[in-house]
Length: 365
Image 1: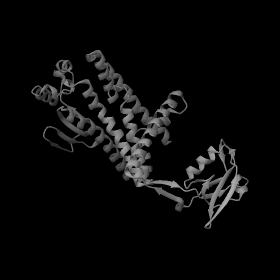
Image 2: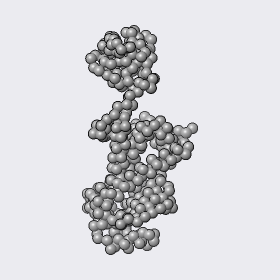
Image 3: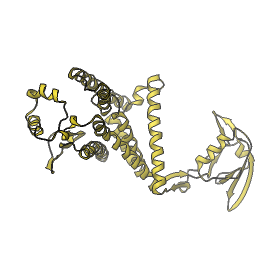
Image 4: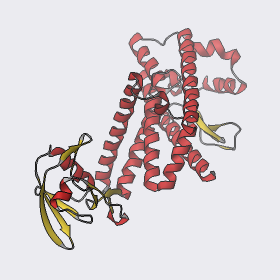
Protein backbone atom coordinates (compact mmCIF):
# COMPACT_ATOMS: atom_id res chain seq x y z
CA UNK A 1 0.00 0.00 0.00
CA UNK A 2 2.70 2.49 1.05
CA UNK A 3 4.88 1.56 -1.94
CA UNK A 4 1.95 2.16 -4.30
CA UNK A 5 1.28 5.60 -2.82
CA UNK A 6 4.97 6.49 -3.03
CA UNK A 7 5.12 5.42 -6.69
CA UNK A 8 1.98 7.43 -7.48
CA UNK A 9 3.29 10.57 -5.74
CA UNK A 10 6.67 10.32 -7.46
CA UNK A 11 5.07 9.76 -10.86
CA UNK A 12 2.71 12.70 -10.44
CA UNK A 13 5.45 14.92 -9.04
CA UNK A 14 7.80 14.24 -11.96
CA UNK A 15 5.06 14.85 -14.55
CA UNK A 16 4.06 18.16 -12.95
CA UNK A 17 7.67 19.27 -12.46
CA UNK A 18 8.56 18.58 -16.10
CA UNK A 19 5.41 20.36 -17.29
CA UNK A 20 6.11 23.51 -15.28
CA UNK A 21 9.81 23.32 -16.15
CA UNK A 22 8.86 23.59 -19.81
CA UNK A 23 6.95 26.83 -19.19
CA UNK A 24 9.77 28.13 -17.00
CA UNK A 25 12.69 27.43 -19.34
CA UNK A 26 11.02 28.91 -22.42
CA UNK A 27 9.87 31.98 -20.46
CA UNK A 28 13.42 32.55 -19.22
CA UNK A 29 14.85 31.95 -22.70
CA UNK A 30 12.50 34.53 -24.22
CA UNK A 31 13.32 37.00 -21.44
CA UNK A 32 10.13 37.09 -19.38
CA UNK A 33 10.74 37.75 -15.69
CA UNK A 34 9.62 34.77 -13.56
CA UNK A 35 8.62 35.61 -9.98
CA UNK A 36 8.01 32.09 -8.73
CA UNK A 37 8.41 28.44 -9.74
CA UNK A 38 6.16 26.36 -7.49
CA UNK A 39 5.78 22.59 -7.35
CA UNK A 40 2.73 21.42 -5.41
CA UNK A 41 0.07 23.21 -3.39
CA UNK A 42 -0.48 23.84 0.32
CA UNK A 43 1.95 25.16 2.93
CA UNK A 44 5.56 25.64 1.88
CA UNK A 45 7.84 22.79 2.88
CA UNK A 46 10.87 24.72 1.73
CA UNK A 47 11.76 27.57 -0.61
CA UNK A 48 14.83 29.39 -1.80
CA UNK A 49 15.52 32.49 -3.86
CA UNK A 50 17.58 32.37 -7.03
CA UNK A 51 18.91 35.33 -8.95
CA UNK A 52 15.37 36.38 -9.87
CA UNK A 53 13.00 33.51 -9.20
CA UNK A 54 11.74 32.07 -5.91
CA UNK A 55 11.60 28.25 -5.99
CA UNK A 56 8.90 26.73 -3.79
CA UNK A 57 8.07 23.12 -2.89
CA UNK A 58 4.72 22.24 -1.28
CA UNK A 59 3.47 18.81 -0.14
CA UNK A 60 0.27 18.41 -2.20
CA UNK A 61 1.60 17.25 -5.57
CA UNK A 62 -1.60 17.82 -7.52
CA UNK A 63 -0.29 20.74 -9.52
CA UNK A 64 2.19 23.55 -9.74
CA UNK A 65 2.63 26.87 -11.44
CA UNK A 66 5.08 29.37 -12.88
CA UNK A 67 4.25 32.96 -11.93
CA UNK A 68 5.51 35.39 -14.56
CA UNK A 69 5.62 39.17 -14.65
CA UNK A 70 2.76 40.73 -16.58
CA UNK A 71 0.59 37.64 -16.83
CA UNK A 72 -2.57 39.77 -16.78
CA UNK A 73 -3.36 42.24 -19.57
CA UNK A 74 -2.87 45.88 -18.55
CA UNK A 75 -6.59 46.70 -18.46
CA UNK A 76 -7.34 43.71 -16.23
CA UNK A 77 -4.60 44.73 -13.79
CA UNK A 78 -6.01 48.22 -13.55
CA UNK A 79 -9.59 47.08 -12.99
CA UNK A 80 -8.78 44.41 -10.41
CA UNK A 81 -5.83 45.91 -8.55
CA UNK A 82 -7.91 46.58 -5.43
CA UNK A 83 -9.00 42.94 -5.29
CA UNK A 84 -5.45 41.59 -5.55
CA UNK A 85 -3.72 39.91 -2.60
CA UNK A 86 -0.92 41.73 -0.80
CA UNK A 87 1.59 39.41 -2.45
CA UNK A 88 0.22 40.18 -5.92
CA UNK A 89 0.23 43.90 -5.17
CA UNK A 90 3.92 43.64 -4.30
CA UNK A 91 4.54 41.78 -7.55
CA UNK A 92 2.61 44.45 -9.46
CA UNK A 93 4.54 47.29 -7.84
CA UNK A 94 7.79 45.54 -8.67
CA UNK A 95 6.73 44.92 -12.26
CA UNK A 96 6.16 48.64 -12.90
CA UNK A 97 9.93 49.10 -12.69
CA UNK A 98 10.71 46.22 -15.04
CA UNK A 99 11.55 46.82 -18.73
CA UNK A 100 8.39 46.36 -20.79
CA UNK A 101 9.80 43.40 -22.72
CA UNK A 102 10.24 41.40 -19.50
CA UNK A 103 6.45 41.20 -18.98
CA UNK A 104 4.52 38.28 -20.39
CA UNK A 105 1.71 40.21 -22.07
CA UNK A 106 4.17 42.60 -23.68
CA UNK A 107 5.72 39.76 -25.65
CA UNK A 108 4.44 38.82 -29.10
CA UNK A 109 1.56 36.37 -29.53
CA UNK A 110 3.99 33.80 -30.96
CA UNK A 111 6.27 34.07 -27.92
CA UNK A 112 3.35 33.73 -25.50
CA UNK A 113 2.11 30.65 -27.39
CA UNK A 114 5.63 29.20 -27.21
CA UNK A 115 5.72 29.66 -23.42
CA UNK A 116 2.26 28.13 -22.91
CA UNK A 117 2.80 25.24 -25.35
CA UNK A 118 6.17 24.38 -23.77
CA UNK A 119 4.48 22.62 -20.81
CA UNK A 120 2.57 19.99 -22.81
CA UNK A 121 5.47 19.71 -25.27
CA UNK A 122 7.95 18.80 -22.51
CA UNK A 123 5.51 16.18 -21.20
CA UNK A 124 5.28 14.71 -24.68
CA UNK A 125 9.07 14.74 -25.08
CA UNK A 126 9.41 13.09 -21.66
CA UNK A 127 7.06 10.34 -22.86
CA UNK A 128 9.24 9.75 -25.94
CA UNK A 129 12.40 9.66 -23.79
CA UNK A 130 10.88 7.12 -21.38
CA UNK A 131 9.60 4.91 -24.21
CA UNK A 132 13.01 5.12 -25.92
CA UNK A 133 14.66 4.06 -22.68
CA UNK A 134 12.50 0.92 -22.66
CA UNK A 135 13.84 -0.07 -26.08
CA UNK A 136 17.41 0.48 -24.90
CA UNK A 137 16.84 -1.59 -21.73
CA UNK A 138 15.32 -4.33 -23.83
CA UNK A 139 11.90 -5.35 -25.12
CA UNK A 140 10.73 -8.86 -24.22
CA UNK A 141 9.76 -10.97 -27.22
CA UNK A 142 8.36 -14.49 -27.11
CA UNK A 143 10.20 -16.87 -29.43
CA UNK A 144 8.52 -18.98 -32.11
CA UNK A 145 8.85 -22.17 -30.04
CA UNK A 146 5.71 -24.27 -30.08
CA UNK A 147 3.82 -24.84 -26.84
CA UNK A 148 0.66 -26.95 -27.00
CA UNK A 149 -0.48 -28.34 -30.35
CA UNK A 150 -4.23 -28.53 -30.93
CA UNK A 151 -5.43 -31.91 -32.08
CA UNK A 152 -7.05 -31.92 -35.50
CA UNK A 153 -5.53 -28.62 -36.61
CA UNK A 154 -3.06 -28.26 -39.54
CA UNK A 155 0.09 -28.28 -37.36
CA UNK A 156 -0.98 -31.49 -35.61
CA UNK A 157 -1.91 -33.18 -38.90
CA UNK A 158 1.43 -32.15 -40.45
CA UNK A 159 3.43 -33.62 -37.54
CA UNK A 160 4.59 -30.55 -35.60
CA UNK A 161 4.90 -31.27 -31.88
CA UNK A 162 5.32 -29.27 -28.65
CA UNK A 163 8.88 -28.03 -28.21
CA UNK A 164 9.58 -27.54 -31.93
CA UNK A 165 11.22 -24.20 -32.73
CA UNK A 166 9.85 -22.73 -35.95
CA UNK A 167 12.83 -21.09 -37.69
CA UNK A 168 11.56 -20.42 -41.20
CA UNK A 169 8.32 -20.16 -43.20
CA UNK A 170 8.37 -20.15 -47.01
CA UNK A 171 12.09 -19.38 -46.88
CA UNK A 172 11.63 -16.38 -44.56
CA UNK A 173 13.67 -16.68 -41.31
CA UNK A 174 11.74 -15.97 -38.09
CA UNK A 175 12.30 -16.24 -34.36
CA UNK A 176 9.58 -14.05 -32.80
CA UNK A 177 6.09 -15.35 -32.14
CA UNK A 178 4.57 -12.11 -33.46
CA UNK A 179 6.32 -12.62 -36.82
CA UNK A 180 4.95 -16.16 -36.97
CA UNK A 181 1.41 -14.90 -36.38
CA UNK A 182 1.80 -12.14 -38.99
CA UNK A 183 2.91 -14.62 -41.68
CA UNK A 184 0.03 -16.99 -40.91
CA UNK A 185 -2.49 -14.15 -41.17
CA UNK A 186 -1.03 -12.93 -44.49
CA UNK A 187 -1.19 -16.45 -45.93
CA UNK A 188 -4.98 -16.17 -46.42
CA UNK A 189 -5.14 -19.95 -46.07
CA UNK A 190 -2.53 -20.77 -48.73
CA UNK A 191 -0.10 -23.64 -48.14
CA UNK A 192 3.06 -22.85 -46.15
CA UNK A 193 6.43 -24.56 -46.06
CA UNK A 194 7.43 -24.60 -42.37
CA UNK A 195 10.97 -25.33 -41.15
CA UNK A 196 11.39 -26.36 -37.51
CA UNK A 197 14.34 -27.26 -35.32
CA UNK A 198 13.86 -30.41 -33.21
CA UNK A 199 16.64 -31.99 -31.14
CA UNK A 200 19.28 -30.26 -33.27
CA UNK A 201 17.75 -31.40 -36.56
CA UNK A 202 15.91 -29.39 -39.23
CA UNK A 203 12.54 -30.75 -40.30
CA UNK A 204 10.13 -29.45 -42.97
CA UNK A 205 6.33 -29.57 -42.97
CA UNK A 206 3.71 -28.43 -45.46
CA UNK A 207 0.42 -27.14 -44.10
CA UNK A 208 -2.36 -24.67 -44.88
CA UNK A 209 -3.81 -22.40 -42.14
CA UNK A 210 -7.55 -22.57 -41.53
CA UNK A 211 -9.96 -19.82 -40.55
CA UNK A 212 -10.99 -20.14 -36.90
CA UNK A 213 -12.77 -17.42 -34.84
CA UNK A 214 -12.08 -14.81 -37.56
CA UNK A 215 -8.33 -15.53 -37.70
CA UNK A 216 -6.17 -17.90 -39.71
CA UNK A 217 -4.61 -20.51 -37.42
CA UNK A 218 -2.46 -23.63 -37.64
CA UNK A 219 -3.33 -24.84 -34.12
CA UNK A 220 -0.32 -24.04 -31.93
CA UNK A 221 0.05 -22.09 -28.69
CA UNK A 222 2.86 -19.99 -27.22
CA UNK A 223 5.49 -21.77 -25.15
CA UNK A 224 5.10 -20.92 -21.47
CA UNK A 225 8.73 -21.69 -20.67
CA UNK A 226 10.39 -18.48 -19.32
CA UNK A 227 13.52 -19.43 -21.27
CA UNK A 228 11.59 -18.74 -24.47
CA UNK A 229 11.34 -15.03 -23.67
CA UNK A 230 14.23 -13.14 -25.26
CA UNK A 231 15.08 -9.45 -24.87
CA UNK A 232 15.80 -7.26 -27.88
CA UNK A 233 18.12 -4.33 -27.18
CA UNK A 234 18.31 -1.32 -29.48
CA UNK A 235 21.02 1.29 -29.94
CA UNK A 236 20.23 4.92 -28.98
CA UNK A 237 19.21 6.12 -32.48
CA UNK A 238 17.02 3.09 -33.19
CA UNK A 239 15.55 3.28 -29.68
CA UNK A 240 14.59 6.94 -30.16
CA UNK A 241 12.97 6.09 -33.49
CA UNK A 242 11.03 3.26 -31.85
CA UNK A 243 10.12 5.58 -28.96
CA UNK A 244 8.74 8.15 -31.42
CA UNK A 245 6.76 5.45 -33.21
CA UNK A 246 5.32 4.19 -29.91
CA UNK A 247 4.35 7.73 -28.90
CA UNK A 248 2.57 8.13 -32.24
CA UNK A 249 0.72 4.86 -31.65
CA UNK A 250 -0.33 6.02 -28.17
CA UNK A 251 -1.53 9.36 -29.57
CA UNK A 252 -3.49 7.65 -32.34
CA UNK A 253 -4.95 5.25 -29.77
CA UNK A 254 -6.02 8.17 -27.57
CA UNK A 255 -7.98 9.85 -30.36
CA UNK A 256 -9.37 6.53 -31.55
CA UNK A 257 -10.65 5.89 -28.02
CA UNK A 258 -12.09 9.42 -27.90
CA UNK A 259 -13.91 8.80 -31.17
CA UNK A 260 -15.31 5.51 -29.87
CA UNK A 261 -16.35 7.29 -26.66
CA UNK A 262 -18.39 9.91 -28.54
CA UNK A 263 -19.88 7.32 -30.87
CA UNK A 264 -20.99 5.24 -27.87
CA UNK A 265 -18.85 2.22 -28.80
CA UNK A 266 -17.16 2.24 -25.38
CA UNK A 267 -18.50 3.16 -21.96
CA UNK A 268 -17.54 6.58 -20.51
CA UNK A 269 -16.32 4.83 -17.35
CA UNK A 270 -13.93 2.74 -19.46
CA UNK A 271 -12.52 5.85 -21.13
CA UNK A 272 -11.85 8.08 -18.12
CA UNK A 273 -9.58 7.26 -15.18
CA UNK A 274 -9.02 9.44 -12.13
CA UNK A 275 -6.32 9.51 -9.46
CA UNK A 276 -7.57 6.26 -7.88
CA UNK A 277 -7.49 4.42 -11.20
CA UNK A 278 -4.06 5.80 -12.08
CA UNK A 279 -2.76 4.86 -8.62
CA UNK A 280 -4.07 1.28 -8.85
CA UNK A 281 -2.80 0.72 -12.37
CA UNK A 282 0.55 2.31 -11.55
CA UNK A 283 0.94 0.08 -8.50
CA UNK A 284 0.15 -2.98 -10.64
CA UNK A 285 2.69 -1.93 -13.29
CA UNK A 286 5.36 -1.29 -10.64
CA UNK A 287 4.90 -4.83 -9.30
CA UNK A 288 5.33 -6.28 -12.80
CA UNK A 289 8.75 -4.73 -13.30
CA UNK A 290 10.68 -1.71 -14.48
CA UNK A 291 9.73 -2.03 -18.15
CA UNK A 292 6.00 -2.20 -17.47
CA UNK A 293 6.13 0.76 -15.10
CA UNK A 294 8.21 2.85 -17.53
CA UNK A 295 5.67 2.16 -20.28
CA UNK A 296 2.85 3.25 -17.96
CA UNK A 297 4.82 6.38 -17.06
CA UNK A 298 5.39 7.24 -20.74
CA UNK A 299 1.74 6.57 -21.52
CA UNK A 300 0.50 8.92 -18.77
CA UNK A 301 3.00 11.63 -19.77
CA UNK A 302 1.84 11.60 -23.40
CA UNK A 303 -1.86 11.52 -22.45
CA UNK A 304 -1.31 14.42 -20.04
CA UNK A 305 0.30 16.42 -22.84
CA UNK A 306 -2.64 15.78 -25.16
CA UNK A 307 -5.28 16.60 -22.54
CA UNK A 308 -3.51 19.85 -21.64
CA UNK A 309 -3.89 20.97 -25.25
CA UNK A 310 -7.69 20.65 -25.14
CA UNK A 311 -9.30 24.03 -25.97
CA UNK A 312 -10.58 24.65 -22.43
CA UNK A 313 -9.74 28.09 -21.02
CA UNK A 314 -7.94 27.02 -17.85
CA UNK A 315 -5.84 24.46 -19.76
CA UNK A 316 -2.86 25.38 -21.92
CA UNK A 317 -4.80 24.61 -25.09
CA UNK A 318 -7.47 27.14 -24.15
CA UNK A 319 -4.85 29.84 -23.64
CA UNK A 320 -3.32 29.06 -27.02
CA UNK A 321 -6.73 29.40 -28.70
CA UNK A 322 -7.21 32.83 -27.04
CA UNK A 323 -3.81 34.03 -28.25
CA UNK A 324 -4.56 32.84 -31.79
CA UNK A 325 -7.85 34.75 -31.71
CA UNK A 326 -5.93 37.80 -30.49
CA UNK A 327 -3.50 37.38 -33.40
CA UNK A 328 -6.32 37.47 -35.95
CA UNK A 329 -8.33 40.23 -34.18
CA UNK A 330 -5.31 42.41 -33.52
CA UNK A 331 -6.31 42.78 -29.84
CA UNK A 332 -7.19 40.56 -26.85
CA UNK A 333 -10.76 39.48 -26.20
CA UNK A 334 -12.67 41.54 -23.65
CA UNK A 335 -12.37 40.89 -19.94
CA UNK A 336 -16.00 39.74 -19.84
CA UNK A 337 -15.44 37.11 -22.53
CA UNK A 338 -12.29 35.85 -20.81
CA UNK A 339 -14.06 35.65 -17.44
CA UNK A 340 -17.03 33.78 -18.93
CA UNK A 341 -14.71 31.36 -20.75
CA UNK A 342 -12.77 30.77 -17.54
CA UNK A 343 -15.96 30.01 -15.61
CA UNK A 344 -17.17 27.57 -18.28
CA UNK A 345 -13.76 25.94 -18.42
CA UNK A 346 -13.67 25.56 -14.65
CA UNK A 347 -17.12 23.92 -14.63
CA UNK A 348 -16.07 21.52 -17.41
CA UNK A 349 -12.85 20.63 -15.60
CA UNK A 350 -14.63 20.08 -12.27
CA UNK A 351 -17.18 17.88 -14.04
CA UNK A 352 -14.36 15.86 -15.64
CA UNK A 353 -12.62 15.45 -12.27
CA UNK A 354 -15.86 14.36 -10.59
CA UNK A 355 -16.61 11.92 -13.40
CA UNK A 356 -13.06 10.53 -13.19
CA UNK A 357 -13.57 9.79 -9.47
CA UNK A 358 -16.96 8.23 -10.27
CA UNK A 359 -15.34 6.01 -12.93
CA UNK A 360 -12.69 4.90 -10.42
CA UNK A 361 -15.39 3.96 -7.91
CA UNK A 362 -17.43 2.06 -10.53
CA UNK A 363 -14.37 0.07 -11.59
CA UNK A 364 -13.55 -0.72 -7.95
CA UNK A 365 -16.84 -2.55 -7.33
